[in-house]
Amino acid sequence: MSPVESDEEDLTRKQRREQSRSERKALEEAEAAGAARRTRLTQLGVVLGVVVVAIVIVLIATGGGSSSNKGIVKKPAAVSTLVNKVEAEVGGIAQQGDTIGAATAPVTMQYFGDLECPICKDFTLGALPSLMQKWVRTGKLRIEYRSLETATREPEVFKTQQIAALAAGKQNKMWQYIELFYNQQGEESSGYVTEKYLQGLAQQIPGLSLPQWTSDRGNGGLSNQLATDAQSANNEGFNGTPSFLLGKTGGKLTKFEYTSLTDPSAFNEAIEKLLKA
Image (cartoon, rainbow, N blue to C red; front, side, top):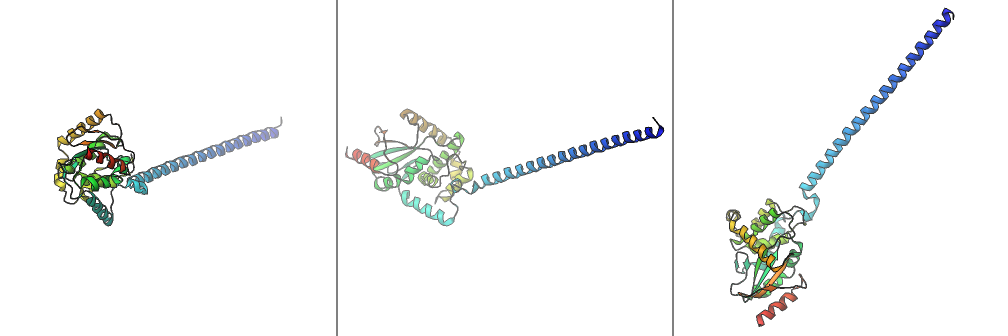
């Protein structure tokens, strides 16, 4: 091989090495660029994920625009209308603790309820107003409210909300609290029952002393009353709300099987029968 041919072969070999290095460098740069793009996309995905989570949290905190989760009526005019409605129903009727109606009423009905129970709401806004006007206001029926946990998912929330109502009963305004709660009941299991919600209900009750109500909520006797109510329900075999016991005042109360919670007819017939007995 001549020197010229050798030089040409070395040059060709060198060119091939240079070309190979250039191609490898280009490939490495392309891979690096791809990795950088993937990193940026991952970072962008994380940022978008954080933004989405933040939006969800804000929606949950503000009720997501769903009126069913808002609970408390906030507009002054609406509050005034609701308070007047409740006062028209129960105002002026004798109350003592958890009981509404004259102590001398010949018939007694025990109403087992959970303040978060939507079916209890159907009764309270359906048949109950008629019973209040026809029988309770006229001194023929007294109604005792008993607490039974069914719809409320968290036992501590149930205890807190029922005691809030019982504490209003210390000022003979439990039935105002109950009525306002059911009228502003939120969506079941939505977590609407907060301290702010319970305080808001108390603030709507005319004449309720908030300092006394707050103090009475710490009364240990109210917790004992919840336990007594639960035991009474258990003794009767009740596992749903609303459930009712009905009978002559001072006598044995028996289970009342209702046919409708919005039509008071069956309640009226049973009460009339007891009055005639």
